[in-house]
Image (spheres, rainbow, N blue to C red):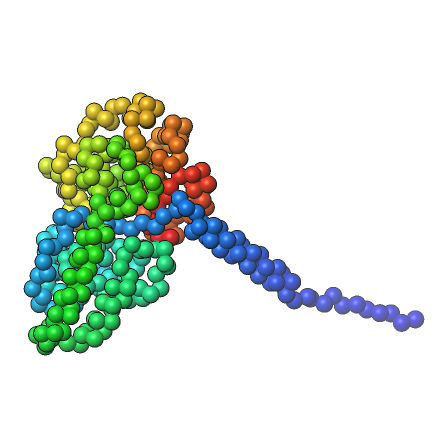
Length: 341
């Protein structure tokens, strides 16, 4: 009688690996489908930072160097402690480097353009089409090529037509910024895209008073257009001109986005009746300046206001917010404006 002895053969983890790959691909497909659905929603809109019109130069300053010595990410070049000196660095330079940091959108882009300087933005071609959608990406690409042409030259070596070529492009950036990227223009963009052009009274709600560039700059636009009729609750103190307030202790040393508004543009009496005013629909439009950082009175607002009259802004960096949270709001009919789409 022959005895057969069967040894247990260890099977490779091929099936497990294949299964994991299938699950991974399935999850990726779901994410892509959600992203496509998200982008096709009529109530989802790209948005960018902006800059107060008062920060934009009226004419190109005398240029003394090709490239600014201020390099993002290189802390040793962060030598400017006040707005005047910081802006002057850009005004005397033909080009200034700017890069993607926490997100593609960066306040530095606007400060460079507003001061008659050409942004040199490596890898701008990789920016998603719906991110920085309001910026002149084609002009930036043109500026990159121009910098490559002159980067090894001294400014005193430029011929008259070469100097004019750089000056003309710098002027195009100034003009584009004034026409499209001021805080007022972004406010108008929000009102147009959300079909709220007839709104007269705005309630701008926040929870976290700390600086948030998108919230702060957009609020400045609303306050500039509507004055006291746009009520920010709670008051974003660093936007206002206040005595004994150390703006330089804030993020980015408070440059560009602080100390902008007269204090009388905030009516403290309106703070006392917020709930009643929401219930009585005193305001034509409710704007949440940073919905990831808090949505005060959300239940009350959604009870008394149609979703078309409620706007949510998202100024978070890449990866700091979830597309699912946008979808949840969009499915309820709210308008959502997102910086890093």
